[in-house]
Length: 184
Image (cartoon, rainbow, N blue to C red; front, side, top):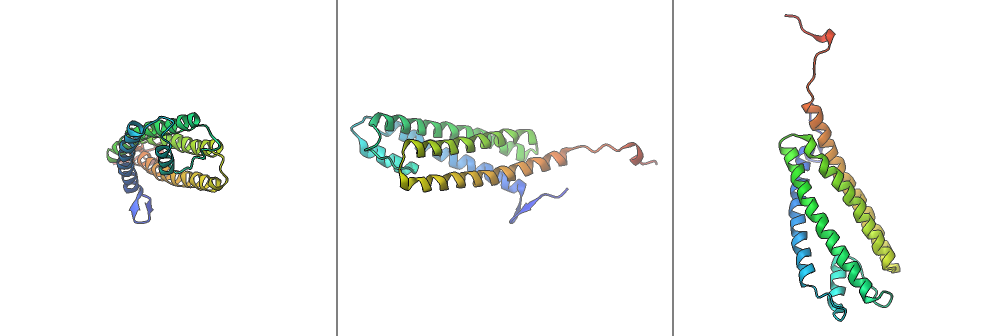
């Protein structure tokens, strides 16, 4: 059975690229988030760093509408969730690569499950950002982030699931049926 080709490469090449890209980007994210969690002063008097951190994360804080403790708690929770999800992404990307290189589809399943959960979590966090920080001009930005997350992760999951299905089909041993046994 031939491999499904998308653009210039087969889905196994895309699965490897997805795995390696996820490992590199997640390691960079964990380093940046760890630095942010340890170096950002979390006292209420330093609002400049919170505004900059929120801008880096892609949402704006309206300090007139929300008290400082809620801002700190939300931002800290947001950073911790991102850090933990990136650590899990590193582990599952290694499983994806192991399954791809060793042609074992059972190692690919955790990546698919975690990517679906990550997509749901990311969309939930964006909805929470829009609800907690009700700012009219940011609703379109939140909607675009949600749509991009859904479609990009959907394509990634489809590529990897297609690769998993191809591995399962290639590993399947075909036993001859009663009428197809060759007589010598």
